[in-house]
Image (cartoon, rainbow, N blue to C red; front, side):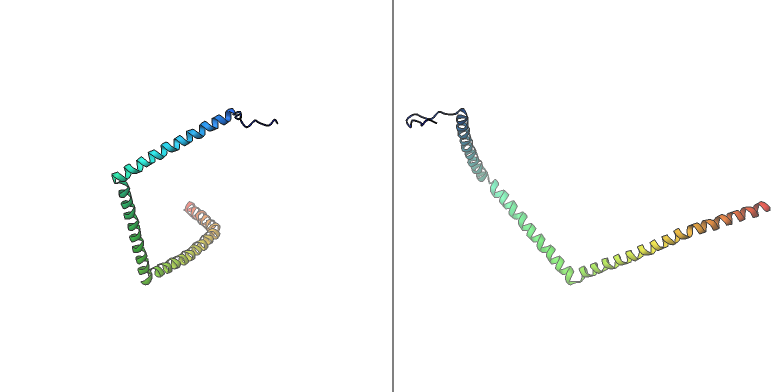
Length: 137
């Protein structure tokens, strides 16, 4: 590598020129966007839109707070009166009864399944006997 003379400017690479133009373009875009944003905020403030959205947001927050308080008070009242405990107990009782019913139905179904072949045989014999008696008459 040969040493460079400090009085002569360095050779510019074509990509370097593109990069410089790109950075300048970005800087101009930032200036334009900043100006547009400043104008937009000024217009919004002067129009009262910012105050409106702030008030609407405050009303929504207060309504949410009040609703949450009412729900909390209702839940406390239900708990104090034992309604939540009684409801939970009723659900537990219903679950136990439903399980017992399911076991009973399952057992009955198994009994029917076991006795079905026997009953079919009995019915077949009865039908055959009835046909024979009828044909003898």
